[in-house]
Image (tube, rainbow, N blue to C red; front, top):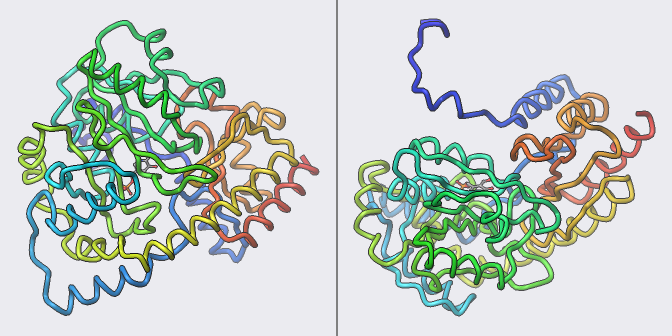
Amino acid sequence: MNDHTIKLAKRMAYIEPFHVMDLLAMARSMEAEGKQIVHMEIGEPDFVTPEPVIRAAQTALQQGLTHYTPAVGLTALRERIAGYYQERFNANVNPEQIIITPGASGALLLALGVLINTGDKVAMSDPGYPCNRHFVRLFDGDPVGVPVSARSRYQLTVDLLEQAEQSPITAVMLASPSNPTGTLLTRAEMGQWMKYAEKRHCYLLMDEIYQGLVYGEDSATIAGQCSHAFIINSFSKYFCMTGWRLGWLVVPPGYQREVDKLAQNIFLAPSTLAQYAAVAAFDSDSISILESQRQQFQQRRDFLKQAIQELGFQLLVEPQGAFYLYADCSRFTNDSFEFCQSLLKQAGVAIAPGKDFGAHESHRYVRFAYTTSMEQLEQGVEKIRVFLAGA
Ligand SMILES: Cc1ncc(COP(=O)(O)O)c(C=O)c1O
């Protein structure tokens, strides 16, 4: 069959690939030709999974623990996560409300799957995590991208939503810390969202996947505080377990059975091996490794933040978390995608174009990820300096 004859659902017209993948492919072929590329486009930690977690997986394999677990995950892991909420955030979360999923991606799928009917409106910030709008489309919902700017630290606020959209909203997708901007919702803003959701009978899908990767202030959660919030989390980022494909969803009271039913049908169960490994992620020896890595991320952020501003990129707000800097590059270009392509081709530095994260003013933004070593970041900055001097 060729492309002209394949049958596709209409929704596929709305599903876009990541533009950065084209850049990554170009970077890989340049590397194959022997060129050195500095990677600042990749949204995953360069650190490998902590050793105690790897050892726990090896033990599970030796013990032959290779069968399905319950669809909602291992009780031991659900209890460890509830314990973590209690110890680290003083948040009271019933382990029964914690559903283990194949990554945060699996958690998003389940939350939207139990909530969204055809045509339901789901609000989200523009810029934001690009898959969100695609997940909504998968359930034939209507993603409502609300333009946000540096004025609200690129976060969606209740005021901005009310100004932008008058018709009823079924769910609001929020993220703190956010991808691509690295900014947080303040506690006051979280409080306003919780009140809004309860009053309007809509649901918050709160993405806390970068929780733990916060610099200069405490990490926060709304788990255990809101009867109208689904909380999405993952072992991918803080825990450095992207390839294990494991995350979790905290569901509001009353949703356990429905989410369990959907999880049984879609996934049967999350990866058994990954779950046994993840139980060890909360041990104190794992947490001390992760905390020292967090400090390295902070040093990298501090370095890169200053270095790119000296080069002439503008950071309009303080990026307090995740591992991203969302920088205004309008001093150099009015087409940030073209800028990323030239930077890669001519200087061997890969960064992500704003258009991967939405449509609002995306031509003037790029995203730097500090998911590589300090030496690489220093080299990258030097290469960008030379590139800009020659431009
Ligand atoms: C904001 C956000 N949510 C969800 C995900 C999905 O993460 P995973 O499925 O690896 O847990 C990502 C991955 O980059 C992300 O940045």
